Image 1 (cartoon, rainbow, N blue to C red):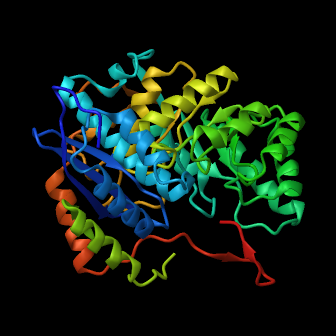
Image 2 (cartoon, rainbow, N blue to C red; image 1 turned 30 degrees about the vertical axis):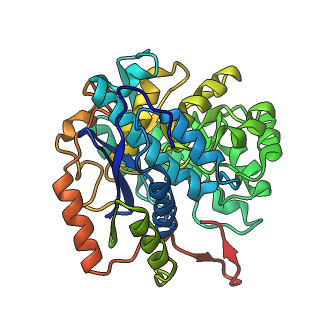
Length: 425
């Protein structure tokens, strides 16, 4: 059991909601009436997160919600096997919701609990171009009209392990189109460009004024990241597929990164209020059919994101949290960004290519103006907790509709080359 105090707020209910477009929201309620929201979206692995929450609920119902660090360490260490995208994404949602509760209980924003703010607003960027980058000039112009001063786009479509250099020229042309509008641009290699091609593309982009290149290689290659960093002067960013400070460590010690990008993150609605229901829920998940259709909340939540940010500062590495996700994950990222000096920009999923008109960044917010973009920035949220109000009725309605319609969880596409071999998405 938890370490209690005379003012403990005991966890009485843990719920998870699978909602469109591809998000998993977490709601935690305490016996004395406080409610916190978290997000555990792990794109393409939704059912695995729901199963992990069956275990987390069984373990932490009745615990003191004020004991954020005790719960985090127990969730991380007490099951022997630890880390990885599934467990850390589930822990992220739990942790974010607990910070939200603590802020609301004390009547202060989460960033106050992290030491107070070091800035009044945070710079943000939007996405353009989609999975198959095209029409970037028009999209960048629209983002500029929306108030952004920076955007991000994918570098290429699918590439072979080694492919024709001709396929890289379009990336340079698209960057020039965006830069001609006076906008900064980050270029996401998305781990789909292997080492031989990545070196060529990074060199081609070096003189184009790119804000950063993201995941130029797969996250399993920290030494090769460092090699690339010695080859080009463009800032190198990565981190969405690194799930704790321990996984960032070789990158920092190897001087492989300039920008750390940790990701702070139903047709099934699970209301997990007893150990028996938790076990039933986990059993049912084991026998769900696999989805056939076609990504924050992955690094362990606010607690671990703040630790990674401080660790990054030690190595003179900037912080740019990765967040192509929902509003709760964004609010959590901003709370940390407001309080960390090495933060420099924040990703927003507003009108991203994975979203839809009826399921976008602002859909589940009671007051979308909290994320209003002006002159490239979003103002520091001032409300208690995460500083956002979730439209709970809509979340419950959409989750139930998702369930009744039998909507399958989101899956990323599978890409194959002309020879039939699998390619990185």
